[in-house]
Length: 313
Ligand SMILES: [Zn+2]
Image (tube, rainbow, N blue to C red; front, top):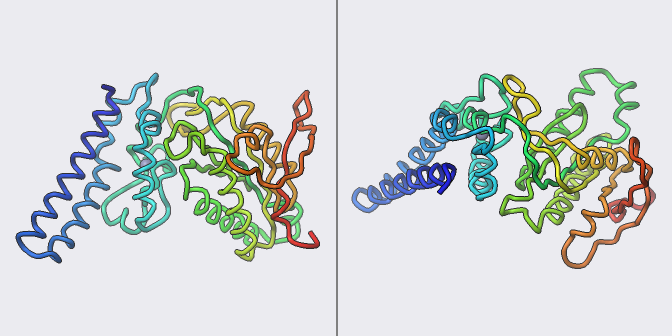
């Protein structure tokens, strides 16, 4: 049995003990006292998971077998993200979504001192190098941003980008996507090994892209969004250790997704042939096109999802 499995069993056992204690109190004292105790007990466990187990994570995570990747494949990360995203409030760890504000702050959950985008446990478990994995990569940005920002003040530009980040983060983290922000672009990495994704990865990504386009359109943003997506093998993990240790992806899949996004028009989703082919059920209506992508020798086949366009666009 792997160390990651022992880690999971340990944490799940602690959570079960907390629930049993609270249930016992509920039976012998009163339902309401039990319920009231259940909440802080569970939240204490969250605090334990996200702060005080960092030293355990550091010991069992190895360069060749980083704990985070094992926990992604087992479904542990996905299950905890679904619970932690419900707790208020942002900012959050980019990996496990535990909140640093609101409830998280009250329980002493703090970002890693080395990379404040992650909680201390996730930072310790992050890969120290890259590993080859199947990933889906989604890029989104605001179309026409450069010319818009030339005619608006820096305050308005910063406000627009931060609202776009918040919307994209909310929409994309509803699934098991790891979201990163690069300039005015948003990049989401879907680790195909995660049980919530696997053969459904392309479907999940397309649904997320549609929700993102709709959310930006309905959110009163002055600029529309364009999305590009591709799927395949990439190097995933940290490109550098130490201060800049993070969770990212690099490789042809990432470059292609980024270039598809650059080629996408307003409110358009450009998906690679591989993504389109991997969609289950009846294929959505899309226009097939060939694109000469910058830096690519061969023309790329892509599919443009146009049904999102409003009449007259
Ligand atoms: Zn975390």
